Every structure is written in structure tokens, then in C-alpha cells.
Amino acid sequence: MAKQRKDSLEVFTTQGRADLAQKEQEELDIIEQFLPKQLGADELKVILEKIIAEVGAAGPQDMGKVMGVATKQLAGQADGKVVSALVKELLAK
Image 1 (cartoon, rainbow, N blue to C red):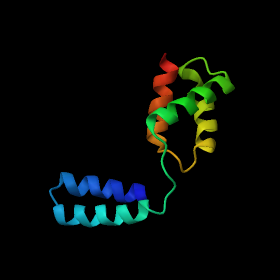
Image 2: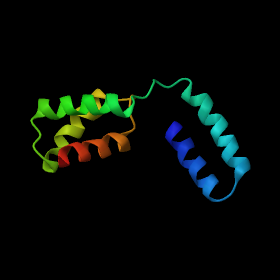
Image 3: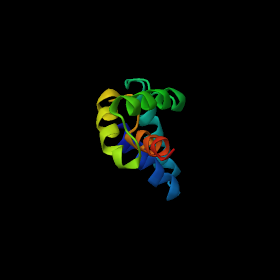
Image 4: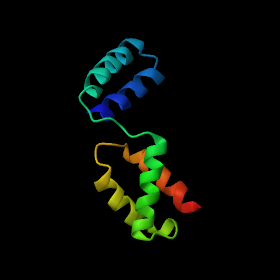
């Protein structure tokens, strides 16, 4: 529900519909009050490094293994796009 509001907010903002964007932002603010707290980038990175070590991931080819575990462990605590980007970055090292 929050993701849908964020997407709509982005579309309305780019289309110059400030009235609709404001309405979406207000609804998003209300929805976010009831959602679990999202992890910060630093906290997320520490958790993902631990998961990478646990599954024995050696490179980008192991992204599926890492994402499978990360998705279960981080359900509701982090956006999947952010997790995916961080996993790619960490596995590229």
C-alpha cells in the first residue's frame, strides 16, 4: 500500500499535479505510522554482509541465494529494491 502511494506520488509530481501529489503524501504519512520501522543503510549492510558469509556467496552469480535468505529475514524491514542494490554492490567486491 505504501509502495503504491510512493509510486503515485512520484508520477503526480513529475506530471505537475501538486494537488494530487499532496493528497498522496498525506495518505502515505498516515500509512507509514502503522508500518514497521525501516532499517537504515548501515544496519542493512551489516545484516547483508552476515547473510553473504552464512550462505558462502562468492560473487554476483550467488545473488539468488543471498536474496532468498535476505527476503525472508528482512520482510517488512527494508525495501526489496534497496536490498537488491546493496547485495549487488557487496557481491561485486
